[in-house]
Length: 86
Image (tube, rainbow, N blue to C red; front, side, top):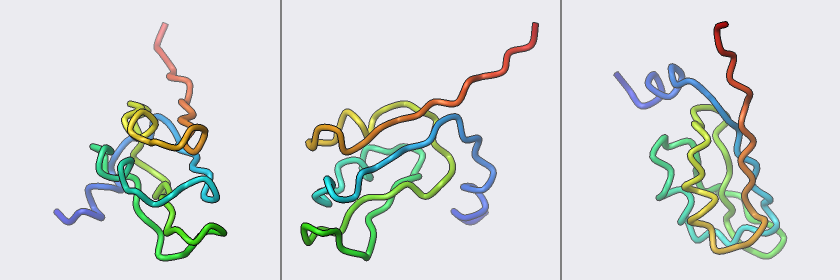
């Protein structure tokens, strides 16, 4: 199985919002993400940094990216409600 095939079958339990203008491109969040759902952009933000971004799927909402980020307010985790059977 390729990485792409694995990534498309992951269950997304949360979304990651990264404010690109606050990101300094250190890559700590990308390294901390065990689900490999973050990457560093080839584009440059207004401060001249290659910023991190969410690939769009696979986030479990663990928060490792949030806690590893040295920039306050740059990363927000939005968890999806879990439907439970009665």
